[in-house]
Image 1: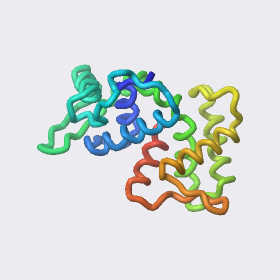
Image 2 (image 1 turned 30 degrees about the vertical axis):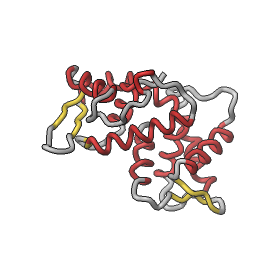
Image 3 (image 1 turned 90 degrees about the vertical axis):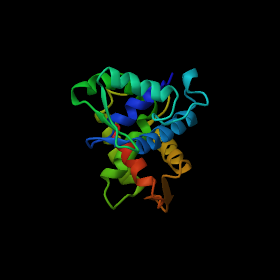
Length: 193
């Protein structure tokens, strides 16, 4: 079951810079909720019809408040959009919550990372080879669907990333969709590893 804490920690820990804005955090949570929903994974009841922003009253704000009280996250009031900073010494504790979501979206994160690593030449075979190497590297970290082959999971993931509007596949080449929100979304998914 995906909880507010799992969504929040996943979005926070994938950020490589010192702090993340409330808006960017919300965008990440919206994307994760969409992916998890598409995968038909169960959400906790708290999340039914709840806002995706940790700055709006609801379960994500409650989870953020808990993370703040436990000193996992520092909340910097900027007079507008707050900045959330993960305390380096508590990253391991936050990872506990993150693992619930990460196992669900592992295929998407691996393919997104492979896309980012492939450089300007994003042929399907090249991205697939990189994704296979990554999946082997993380084989002890993730739980993969036992009845599905890597090829099946890869194709299914490409199709899902297309349905999400993040990529286009044309003539055996994967293109990153041109919309402004796409690059940050792929970067986020790729950095969840």
